[in-house]
Amino acid sequence: MPPSPRSKPPLPRLTAEQQAVVEHTGDLKVEAVAGAGKTTTLIAYARHRPKARILYLAFNRAVRLHAQQKFAEARLPHVRIETAHSLAFASVSRSRKLEVHTPGWKAADLFKALELDRRIADRRTGIALCQHVLLRTAHFCNSTLAKLEEADYSATLPDKAAREFARHHQRTIDELTRRFMQRMYEGSLPVTHDFYLKLFHYQQPRLPYAHVLLDEGQDASPVMLDLFSRQAGEKVIVGDSHQQIYGWRGAVNSLAAMPWPMRPLSQSFRFPPSIAALALEVLRLKRHLGQPRLPALQGCGSGKGPLRSFAILARTNMGLIEAAIEQLDDRPRLYFEGNLNAYLYAAGGQASLYDVLFLYAGQPRKARHELVRGFQDFADLEQYASDIADADLRLMCRIVKKYKTDLFRLLEELRALQTERPEDADLLLLTVHRAKGLEYDSVSLADDFLTPALFFRTLNDLGADVAGPTLNEELNILYVAITRARRRVELPESLGGLMPRQPEPG
Image (tube, one colour):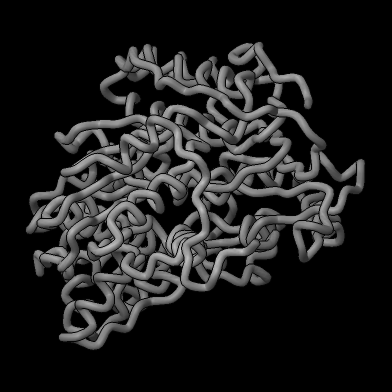
């Protein structure tokens, strides 16, 4: 008999670990492995406190929408679900008119907005400076620092050439960053999402909630974490340190930073022990980075049943394009999560793969993005990508040199095989960052992840102090990719030696 409209639907039976989280009083951090039933646990936590005002802080809009649906189904109206940015926008916009730059500032746009085309004759250098201004602004706004000069921006750049460029032009970058932020503050330029979050942080808000829950806490930036930790109510932060994959955007290991009691959710109901073993093989490499402790990951899924969803996951947009091209001989129906066009751009949307291809073919006037049209030749673009440490743009240059002008035809073939709905496709294609929180019966990894050979070579060349944070995040990305699978994982040859214990199909 279905529940009455006023009754709450029954919750699944909780494990002892989940019950311990639900009954805990006081601040708490929860280390939850992939597939451990975080949402189920937090719903049970809220249901256990029916008269308390509860704020659930989601990491991004997608997580927020998912949580809103789940909490609504559980009929828990005393829980408010927001992101840090949605709270910040609502608060800051009360005192000032906020125009947010959509889809986000690009270096070439900022070059014009700051009227640098009148001051800097070398356009490539000017645009590179603006890219550093955008990165420096984001770095400062995601920090807890009060003044720009307190932030050591160049030290955050992993690429030697980019660090040298930033240090050589440090005064100019700092001057332009101050001008950019001042104009956003005055309202003469549209603001970034990071900027109004920083303004909210300056307000040091105290929110009227008895309990504040922070989901995906491992990906919180320092400013998000500081906003959360200052609240007076009981605080629960839930996440998985090994799923932290947004360090490049300022995320910190917030679970380690909080001096609170810790409770684990170690049982994954998503996948069987064989896939758990593969994931642990990846994390075992962290011992070389001074992290000897492995999570108590238990694969409790059966791994049995038909394979209905097949996904290819890549580390990068260009890695996904290459993986898709390799499937063309079989002519499968392809679904690109977010559409194929979303994967043809470098991070920040500065240029498309077609733009770079036109420049390589000696037809720069056909490039849509004026950034690319302004380069003298393909070599000039490669140098720019090095100056700003744009790994995505460098990968674009590599894939263009690999396929040359045949790439025009190959991209059109991919477009012809693309479906509009995932249920109509033979293969689902997406990057790991887009796959966060998703799962599939069968997962195949593209050949662009960190390999054991590259891991040890980088560690030997740079040492753990320099390379450790980057290598740690790359291992996390590989871990997240593997743990999207419910029943089967297929690995490229470059990863076969690392993970010999491949699971059998169900």
